[in-house]
Amino acid sequence: MKRKLMHLSAIAAGAMVLLFMPLPAQASEAASPESSPTYQSIVPTAQIIDWRWKIEDGKMYKRLYNYTIQQWVGEWIYCP
Image 1 (spheres, rainbow, N blue to C red):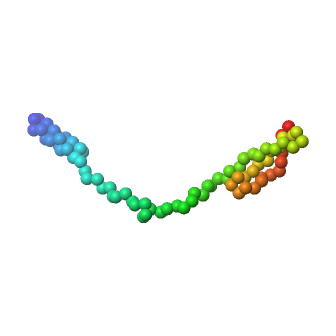
Image 2: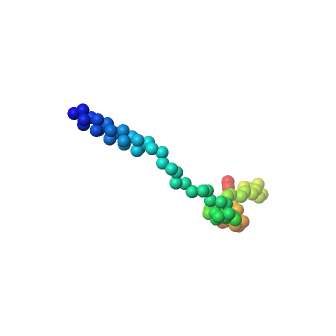
């Protein structure tokens, strides 16, 4: 019985040593900026569209404007 207990404790101690043993790092050097791809410009994926307002003859109108391509979207809508 004593021999079995000594054997199990030796196995447990060996497992603990293996679990907490430091390992060398396998990291490589950081890539230099010259070797990484560079992007000259950022291209937006969504259009920027917002309302434009005007008052004509005391009446308010709104119309959508696409700021990305600088064009009007739709017609003027009267806002009562």
